Length: 213
Ligand code: B1M
Image (cartoon, rainbow, N blue to C red; front, side, top):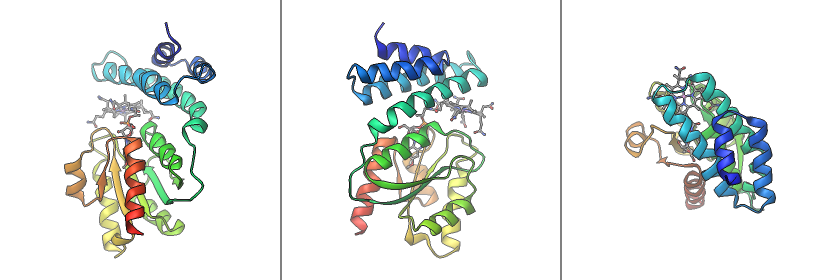
């Protein structure tokens, strides 16, 4: 079995220490970091996600797999984040209120840092008021929201509404994403952009900030 396959395998078993060790080993073997991420870590999580959907595994198994994924990401982060010298702008990012999923959000934050953004990561379960207060406090250019649950997606709209209420909607580029979010939803709630993955988010955010001048 290749190191990449082993990473996926140990991740599915929730074996964080092994995942960490194997990710380092793969890097030492000069494996491409994006291959380690996509074909090792994310592949393993997709298998678990599918089993979760089919009731073949349950929350505790998913949780340990998620921890193993985060352990692997911690090793990969310095390699994936090769930030440019010129700061591109400021981003406030978080997972919306009621939602505790943070793996995708962490990846997005990592990629944003990678293209040179200064990133304030507010974590999970972030209230609409907190997004807005933090964006104002740091003078953010972009607000990035992640949601993984159909029940928490409306909290993205609450942030847009709050910005409108305060008369500051035009100050920010608002971006949304997460497994169930799509272009149509983004349009409906008045966000500026939906992007399907972390790398696209970083690319689009950079272009949007540069286009504003
Ligand atoms: Co949850 N969960 N979960 N879960 N969980 C989902 C989301 C679910 C689809 C699984 C399923 O049933 N098929 C389902 C939601 C169904 C729905 O709402 N329609 C679900 C459910 C129901 C729940 C609970 C309610 C389960 C329960 O308690 N009965 C509960 C809710 C807790 C809460 O948040 N209040 C719950 C709990 C959990 C765990 C804690 C066990 C764990 C989270 C651990 C953690 O994050 N630290 C967990 C996990 C891991 C999942 C699945 C299996 C995997 C999510 C993940 O991390 N994927 C997920 C199934 C699935 O998505 N297939 C599921 C890997 C990650 C890299 O992908 O986050 O999609 P993702 O991010 C992607 C893109 O979406 C994008 O970039 C990333 C890739 O580059 N992206 C953005 C993300 N945010 C972005 C923002 C952007 C742009 C792109 O801004 C511009």
